[in-house]
Amino acid sequence: MNFYIQQTISIHQLKIGSLTNSSVLQIGTTGKVQPLATLSNTGQFTQPAPEAKINIQGEEGPFVPLQSPV
Image (cartoon, rainbow, N blue to C red; front, side, top):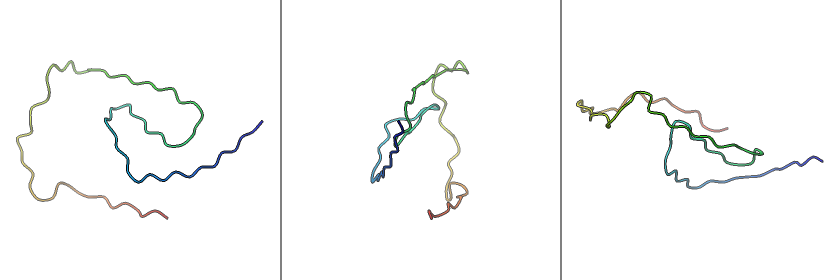
């Protein structure tokens, strides 16, 4: 038996609570997704990184233009 699913999704506002290096944002249907998240302290850090000492004023960096949707 074959199922053909057609859907339209309109997102007007999306709030994301947190992101990690293994975050996946799925919108729509794709069968079954097995979640897996592994956080590792590979550098053996014991405290947060110190604040940056350089204050950047003016432009924050080069901007890359994005193509408009077709």
